[in-house]
Image (cartoon, rainbow, N blue to C red; front, top):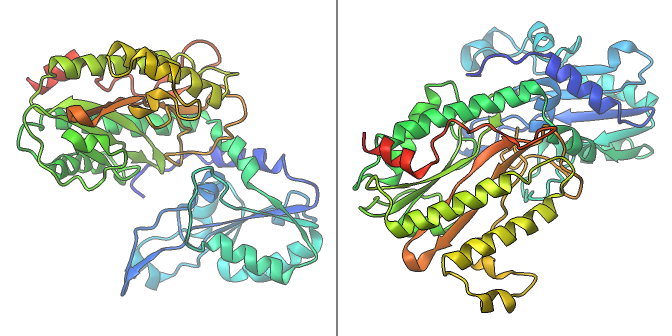
Length: 430
């Protein structure tokens, strides 16, 4: 881990909140991620499954969490199982969690080696009536790989067919969508690292630079500030590449007069930041580019004000659509006939702004949150409108990360990252 150890009181609170919503005589189990293979003996860098991380802070493979609030044996009410470490593992792979360190990180007193799991879990299941399985129910999920959780669910259903089962995910969707102060501080740290990266490239970009060189500069700054790197695959799209929403090859040269759309964000302690800025390769916006830029920024600023407790995600996006429609009419990209004759299922503004404006953010870039329930205080959302004009050779998107407040406008975690056109031009021309 590159990051500082997180206070275990966060995980103690998270488990308490989860267990408070479990049905009586229930046990819940959470598994770490696998280390995924590439080929031969190569593997992907390990990233912990976010749910077990949220509940334990244990950022290590081959880890299991068992919660059984009604266990007759008080030592079985919270149990963490970790891979047994030894001197050989320490030499080849480095430090792993000892039982003492696992307790320090998680706040869980009952820590066992993983080899003890089957025996203890059988005892627990003879005392429980139902088991909470942790399935991925995120609205964007598209998982083709069988996960460690999948294998555990399959094996447990076969071994204990008389038990009933419940879903952990609806509980976690609600809990994880509302952030603790410690979590908000970690996201703020990620945003601060992103700011350093962005300021670095403002002094670096000029005609002739390659998109991947910009990516390298960002990665350099992220790593030197104790981030693992990008929170998601970075988008660095110059010219018409900005009109490809998930452009990730980043292999083109940036030309004089073009704009560069940068959708990038550092992670810190597994928490994401998610920023988009659009800057001029030559250090100055053209008149038309500035006109569209200002329109996007106004939609972003007005949309941000609507992220308040009590609002609904769907209705919020409908209102943002009205803001964007007006902006596109003012820019002469739409006319009144386009709007009058629009398909209600695909409004006219979607020709130039085809994605959503906001999503939850936290341990996942597209974080947990139940979209048909009201927004509440301490939810973290992105705000990211854009206007994409392939016919004119550029696209503009602007994005900040904000925290919903009890009263008033959201708190902008990216308030210190330059976004005003004049400031960006000034910094690029220093």
